[in-house]
Image (cartoon, rainbow, N blue to C red; front, top):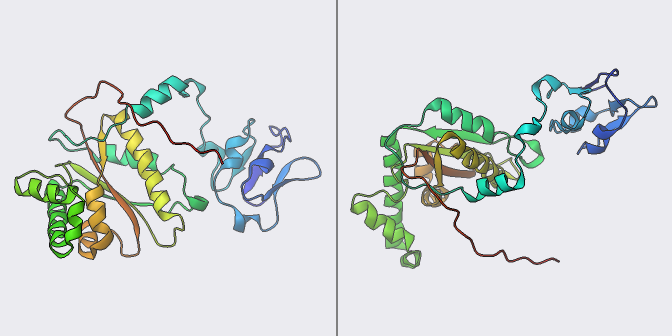
Amino acid sequence: MGFIVIDEQRCKKDGLCAIECPAAIIRLQGDGFPEMVPGGEALCLLCGHCVAVCPEGALSHKHCTREECPPINKKLVLHERQAVQFLRSRRSVRLYQDMPVERETIQRLIEIARYAPTGGNTQLVEWIVVDDKSKIKSLAGLTIDYFRRLLKEEPQAMAYAALPRAVAAWEAGYDAVLRNAPALIVASAPAEAFNGMIDVTLALCYLDLMAPTLGLGTCWAGMLQRALRVSPSIKEALGVPAGHPHHYPIMLGYPKVKYQRLPERKPPKITYA
């Protein structure tokens, strides 16, 4: 039977688990009940599709048991208008209240973010949380120092107006890099994650979209990311593992303001090939 166990009293022999299996390692036996093919354990993605797709709850997986997989509550399913407003109301928050984000709340966010898809279901994304405001300010200062060097050594960097503006703002006493955020979260993945940057991005998108439901706001820290890509010292100061070339930081905190409307965007450019 391999990793899967079948409740023959519940199983309707519909073959949905075999059809749905992305690794094609489930087949139907002569009696109509599903089984894992010989050697299937080595190929199993541990994705849980076989457990999730069974309408009878007849299949359990050793590493993704039926008991660990709650049924979908149809009362909680979003309809289209709810989903559209939810997605359109997401904002990049750059003004935060001067109050910490509870670690229990951050834990809840990351627990949800781990359900984001990863290439091959490798689930290699790791997390760094910085909630010490002095360290966050230090990271912003290191980023400004990098920008100063860049602007001095590579004058063409002046073309990217955000860099000299960030330096000028810092010198005027304002942090345009990390916005005085009370928390900073970094998702990273090791080199062996063949889809690493996509995995990191998807995980942060889950966290980003979940945050407003807990009263929080986020902003992707692009300036810090620019420095992290080329500065080993800043990467070390943040604590990103040396073997993790895939990474991105995001600011987190309680917003100072509430948004009341849904701004429009440019119409999409679509080509059907």
